[in-house]
Image (cartoon, rainbow, N blue to C red; front, side):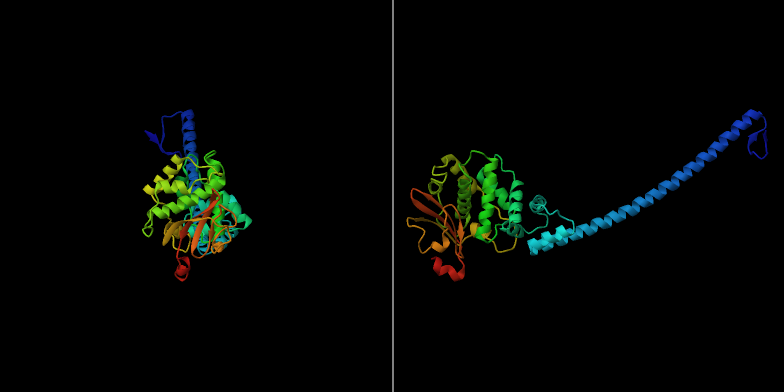
Length: 324
């Protein structure tokens, strides 16, 4: 039997002490239920704040991504303006290391524009170039493998001075990663151009006279600070290019990557005269440095009192007669 009083559902046979205990339990129950409801309300409030915060962060990220995309477009049209835009909008730090990393990743960037920016002669651009080259790891790679990696990360610009700076930086980095392979960076520099031109000779259908490995070895005698490079090394480089040509990044634009890889005509000239000659406008003042005019790109080095002109001809219609 249950006694109906103010305290509902209190059994009538409970002692006063037991009733007091039951009341305490019920009161504690109500307190716990109130605490649970309060926690539910707090959780709902926090969840709402998180949702609003997520929406805010999402909007910020969307805005940032739009600005980054705009910066990339500006860079592809004008590299310097694109970099300036990214820096001004706190999307890129104004350090050569951060800019080099941005160019090295190359996401959404035109590789011709990357080459143009890296080739600039401003001191800061030169620092970016060296930081960019430092991001390449050439350790234990032969020269052809290193060139494949390097030339895939950008496209060669269309000015001789820019190409000089970039290839010199490459040669320095390669020698830094591979001590003892060459006597000097000049050797690496000259051989790199010889390999690029060998690629053209072997794989361009317009070149009918394909050089043999013996000719390639002969044309590179004496370039190692007056000494010869190991024949086995040159044979391996030759075979690597013969078996697999360089791959060119797919970009539209007017640059000398096509000059190297797709000339209209290619050949080797052996010249005994001094620099003062009808070709002087195309000849550098220092052996080992390349030069460019509108019709010919050449790398020059000396051996046995002779100047060997390793020439890759690129004919422009209005200069074709002069080149022939």
